[in-house]
Amino acid sequence: MSSLSRQDAEAQVRSWGFPTVYTWRDGPNAHYPPHKHGGLTTHLILSGEFTVCYPEDDPLKKETFGPGARIDVPAGKVHEVWMGKEGCTYVIGE
Image (tube, rainbow, N blue to C red; front, side, top):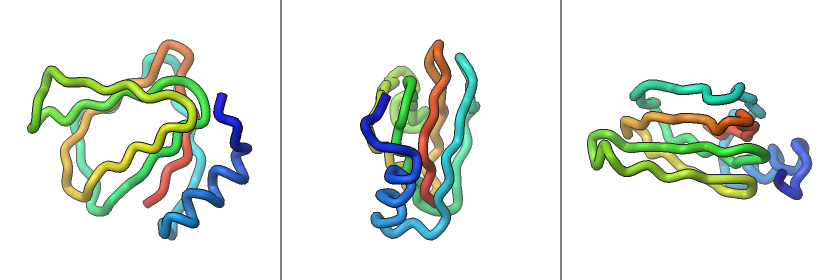
């Protein structure tokens, strides 16, 4: 578990310049198939694991992140995401 509270984590993401900030929770082993967003998005992990792959770059390379990690996904970048066996809670900035 991250040492940041939800409120502090959301404030931190806002301080990075993201106008839309919210906390999201995915259940165990949740999966988001390849997709992209129109703008830069960030994810600040509060608990659990978050694994990301960029299939257009290297479909076999996956990176897993835990509490305290920040993952930025550039606008228009195709990515695929899996949550760990305990799910994942994270703050999203858009």
